[in-house]
Length: 349
Image (cartoon, rainbow, N blue to C red; front, side):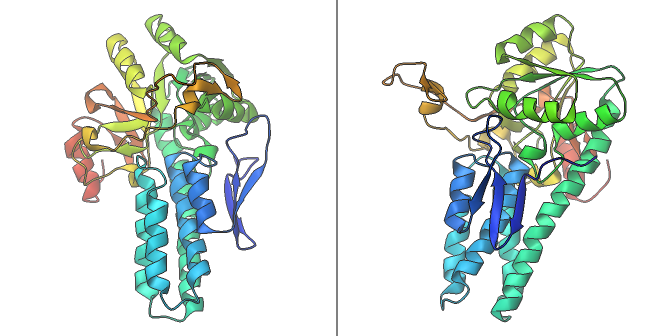
């Protein structure tokens, strides 16, 4: 089943992104005509979610190429643009992965006429977007295996079509189970301080007509303790080679509670989110965001302006707390390090 909305689309020499800062009250698109616009859209969270950030960055490289194509120092300026885009958000590995892929595509054709260079880069960005949608559909099929009939599922942050090029990762699994008539029910955490669960996941669940309820983040532990959650399914922004997962702040706490009460805990990520060169999750750079995200809720001030704030966007869940990592190539289960290495070698799980 297809979405009723398009998260990101390139047309008329511009990238159009659903402006996720203003959902669900306002449904509008943010237009990127320069690579600087793309960098802002990623940094200010017009677009968010590791796969969506990667696809957006790919088009950002193409837009930069269009901007600099007629300059003598084309390659130098394009590399500067790539580096600029890569610094927009540090945690999600898909950003760097997509930019590197676009740069490699450029190097293959850099001696060609300008028109061919631009055509090759546009084709590569289009393929990154299309691949993501295909990958998400496959992860949904793979992940549906772990969802029992009549399951009550808890999810955190937003992992649907809004966080990807289409369909979704963890929410894609949930949708697959729903359309498979498994009679599921979903609890969605608010996901403070940006409320991606309340603003985005709740909106996507409502659009898909999936039975669900929104809860404060702090209510999740009670539901798990009381045996009302059958499994937790959420996403991931970077997975280390040992299976540690960086995801939205609050994920680690959920994993601890799930482990204590024997509730299965799954992360859903494409292979592009696995950083095969990073041995441990403790090495993942964790983005810290502006204090105003905590001091204000929308335009309403809820804390003193001069209060110090600790506002990490992500935390790292150790692999010992994870039941499985769902990918398009199968479900990675313990021992994670060995099985991730098998995937790196191209073996099947």
